[in-house]
Length: 460
Image (cartoon, rainbow, N blue to C red; front, side, top):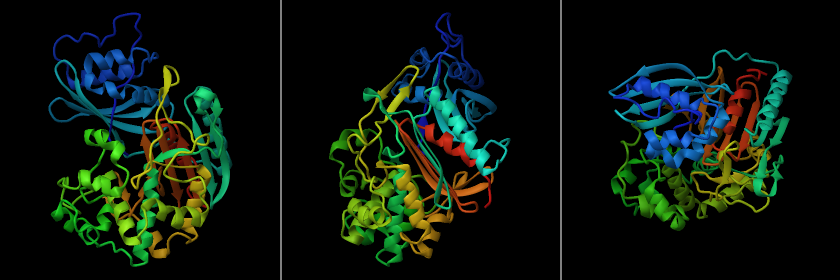
């Protein structure tokens, strides 16, 4: 998951909020308590007042944070630990869901200087496993309650050994036309699209058109940073260990209209120094998957999107999957909260790093094709699904996250952006597969995936 900074909530405006005019310097714990009180307040309407008064640098995140507050229902504080000067880390559990999260708050005398959300690396320990029928029934009840409250908008599919057990769709694909979700609605899938780029790369590896040890310089001899190109390999890019970093930020915002191909990105970002020596550690990298797109083009002689269409989507029957949205069939991404007003966002354009579009049934076909050997041979599938490097609290394969939910191991990928959240997970021991897509931001889909992943049986 990408780094996300947020500040949340608000107290009723009927009286002066306790956090409005702090007297003297506040400790990190005092700031945390004020922040949590604001986050958990019933009213979302005064959220902006807290941000503008104490964290003005986070104003651009207001709409996303309102959506986060609505989706989670607020936070239960589990524990907090003070770290360096002015810093405190707190662990929370969602009020409405099982998800746990971690917040690092950096305090200054008269404001919060920074507030960063991180994954907690742990699941709720008190969730009981259920039988298949009971777990699916409970999921349906939960989704109906969340949908009735306006807190979930998306589609859900649960399958076992490739056979669908449960489908669900709720919310609005286009609020301006009151167009409701359907099981076949297309969604932006964000970084879930990296799964396709990884499979394409491993196809070329298993055909000996690429090797995992190939450096960038073999395929891009004119890469601007020649030293980095000699050090970073295909395997480094697939496992996010190349130090290649991100591309989002001011440079991207200023040049987004002209960034259409992997080579366009290389011209803008290729001279940068790596964030760390190749292979020394894990660091999630969107730019690294742009570079994989460039390698796919050079090794195959095809544009990366044409290669994916011919060698993945058409091969396993994914007619609704592509880098671009389709009018009338694609859910519009929304930021904000239902309680305070949702705001539509423009459609994203797909890249080798993600941002394309798909449906729950297309993603089910993708999973079936993988396991049936229609996309990768046994060696390629093992590379894709077996953990190779430590990735914070999880493992990372040559393209996928390998982790656990309540002791049940899975492999898959999630994706998130403003107005986008999705999650794909396959549990090898039990054969269960969960796919959740939403046109609201994180954690709308992640909460659902965690909820059912913690309750389904762990074995066949």
